[in-house]
Image (spheres, helix red, strand yellow):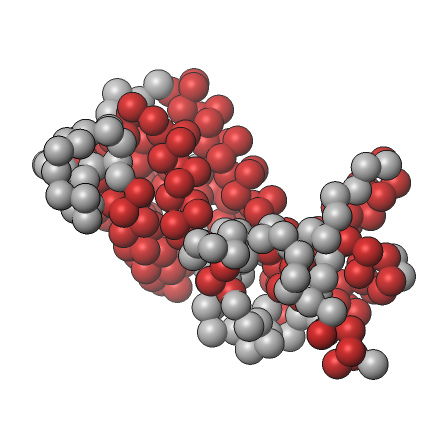
Length: 242
């Protein structure tokens, strides 16, 4: 029976939802299921996550879960999509309040907001915008949780590019080689995200709250790379929200 249930899977939209709830009661059930998925990720990891356990934690029948989600990867995709939307909303507010003057300022806020969510948001340490452990057992395609046609970091890069706009210099050097990682280009942002993934994983392996020295170095690395030149001094580690 479980095998049959798990085979009703991965045909839904990239963010995992088979259908979006409209009525308030359905919306509440949908959010409870995504919340339960996040909580169970912290407790057991993606490899041990099952749709049955998520439904039980959320207090809804398993049939209700399958009304909204195609299976385990669908749930993970929905949580990744929600995490990304919340991250972008929070970052947009910080950018509006701080009005950073250039790329290093954007990078500082982007890294700080990611770290803040990593410390406080359930499940974020296991699944931010894609699986932290990309080889999690029982997950067939963790690289395309946000978009079936793009890997997770490319999908995130496009959203950051849209948010950062002129601040990132996305249109800089349009005459350059089409395959060059120009400052603010999708390719440059994708490379930056891959680098940030590695450094921030190290920061949280070193210290459960994120090693402040490594977080500062992550800002420095990304600021220099994305600015295409020497970075402005990074903000002090003490400024990073805890």
